[in-house]
Structures are given as structure tokens and as C-alpha cells.
Length: 158
Length: 158
Image: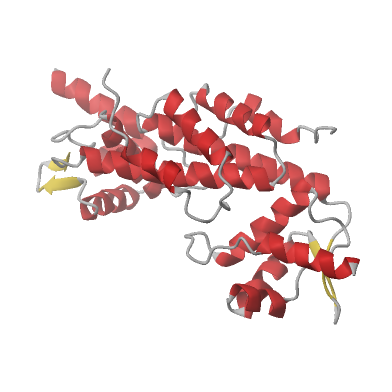
């Protein structure tokens, strides 16, 4: 019973894929697996959903899922047991965690610097970050309307 | 005299291009021009540096600059006066501003949601955003060491 419940959870992690996003689906799958390892939701020895299961669930081409799994294997994050499935590797958690944090810091710095260059105030930038923190929308789905409404805000009169 | 000073300022806006960034140089140029219009640093009628000037200054291929200027023209943000130069279009400021803000909101939401999925706490995410706010590094350059050091932070004991 426990195994079924676990498989379900693994599927949940990967079900926030958004096929309408501008981020390629195979990249979304790779990122979600990395985030789940970094956060401890996927642990060494955990099995990923099979290519067929995941492609049916997300209604995408099996080759897309296969590409993500191949890439993750090249990165050393997963291994394949022939005829059995794809599993999370041992001893990769802290490296994966640091790599995720490093990428997030670079991207956060980039978007904040872009916002400053666009003339947004510190107050506006912090407001957008905080509204994003309180949203439950996945990273590759459209942000909630309360957030996108801020785009139409008029320039503050100085 | 005023014209020279203005041309210099335009050049400044575009001199934060970082050729070591993973963001393509032509995209950086396009983004910087859009941010400068959005923030009011570039106004209708302002002239962009010539393709030759900018490519020499940044030590990049003139075709790269030409591609950016062509893209910006297709977007309707600039126009070319043959034999004269490339100028910022009229009546585009508020549209450009809204478009920049919209993109920044989508990307901020994306990076915050990624950080949450990676197991970062709200406190850590706000800390990275605030440290980024206080940094003067351009969007496509490496973040300062004080920021990247946060990547190696150990998981908080709960």
C-alpha cells in the first residue's frame, strides 16, 4: 500500500507541468525533479513515474518524457534499472540543493535588476515578490490575476 | 554640446551588456532599450548609438547590434531614418512600460515558485530579493558574492 501512495506523490510532483508555458515541457520536468530532490520530497531510491504513465497523465509525447529522464541521467541525478524503472541516485541531495539555490539566486538577481532598470520602485518589487510568495500557482503557469493586475499600475507621481 | 552628452547617456544605458552572460547579447540590447523606454531614460525622438559605435564599444559583431535594432523596429519601438540613425518612436512609452512590468511579474512569480518548490523558506526568498535590490550589478552580470554565498547555506534545522 505504501508503495502505491508514494508513486502517487511522485506523480503529483510532476503534475504541475503546464503545457501552455513558454518553458519547454522537458525542461519543466527536469526542473521539477531537481526541485523535488533539493527540497527532500524525492529521496535516494525513489522511483519516478514510468515514461508511459507520465506521458499519458500529462497528455504529451512519450519522447518528451524520455528526453527529460535521459538528461537527468546524464546529470547524474537518476539511474535506470533496465525493465524496472528510473530511480533517484544516492548522495546527490546537497549538490542538487546548492545548484538549485545558485540558479534561483542568479535569476532572482536578474529579474530584480531588470525591474529596477524598468523604473519600478523597491516597494513595487517587494510587493510583487510577496504576492508571488502567497500564491499557490506552479512556476510555469500564469500568475494569478491579483499579480498580473499590477502590470497596469500607473507611474507614481513624484 | 547637449547632443553629445545625450548620446553619451544612451551609450551608458547599453554599456551594461555582459558578453559572458547566458542571455544572448542581442536579447540584452533589446531588453535594455525596452527598460530604458519603460523607465523614461529613453524618450520619443532620442537617437540610439549607431551600429558601428555600439559594436566597437562592446567589442561585438556589428550584425548582432543590427539584429537587435531590426527586432526593435519590428516591435514598433524604434524607426530608422535612412542615413541618419535609429530613433525611439512616439507614443510607445506606456505600452512598453506595461509590457516590461508584465514580463517582470511573470518571471518574478516563476522564480519565487521555483524557490518554494526547492524548499527555500519565505524568509530566505525575501532575503535574496532584498540583497538583489541593494546590488548595483546589471541584470545579466554575475550577482555579487554576498548574494551567491547564500547558495551554500545549509538546510535549516526544524
